[in-house]
Image 1 (cartoon, rainbow, N blue to C red):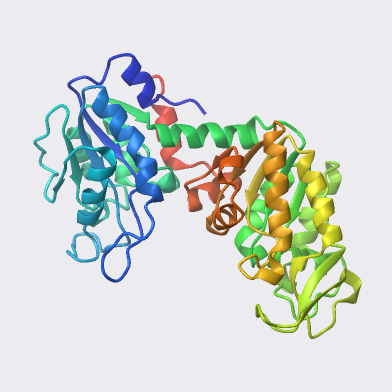
Image 2: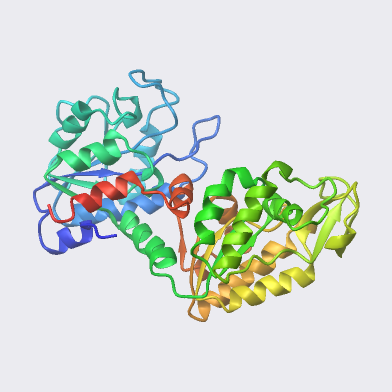
Length: 401
């Protein structure tokens, strides 16, 4: 994937005195009192703003928050006011919030203005050309730094990139593109993918796409249980989707045809109740009782999976192998996290994405031992599905413009 970058434009001196519009992802969660509860997206958005400021640009920052109704504005739920205040502190310069901006914004070099919630604008979600032209008229350079919205073909992610004179990727977007390219298109083999989660139905497209690319596909959670059914094992009252057994068998057939492998659990941790305090035991996969549910992989399986991960050249991680939030069922995911960290330190490239995965990365303290942690939930998943991400395609189309 080839795109123009904000860094390259800054180094070439092409931003001085220019109006730069940065599409960031500042959709941070708030508590009932209106306080920001997780500012990871805000922190990740700072480098693009500082880069443009330091290059002498007049900076406009655009983002969405929540899921507002287009054409309406709820001062309490939709505003970016608290985000503007916090971003002022993080960037180190005052940031003014502009409510009405479609007819133009007064901003001078060295200044930053944040534009109010773009999803309140009529035509945003459907990428209406008229709105995209209004966005483009605000700037000389458009910067997409919101990978988390890259799978959305909207006016602020795709339309404006098609209308503006110069369109480029911000440092966060550029890093995501580089990491995803290294993880799949230019992967160093053996390529190992981990796909965990409760349902095969939500990850079926990913599984089918990765089956054609990977050397080994590790599955966990309810997904692994459905694959166990497909292989002829009984899983008691474990979360599974019997109706998708045939689809799992197709994935297994694809892997077998290309000489790849999906290592199924040989031992598991089971309990009769989905509870941290329930009695639990480790048993062979053949010995799971009808009234038991599988909540983690056993030590033998964990050792085998970790051996695979330590020998990998590239690791794509999306999902845990057990209910890692509960101590009795966290060991499998903890072991896997440690193995991924060790493999990365030994030269493998690793990328982790998805809410549960990032939570596991944090819990087992390996954030600094993974090559890249993706900021995009839906965008990361759609990339793994093999889909074209509209916002990135729009930047690629403008590469030689």
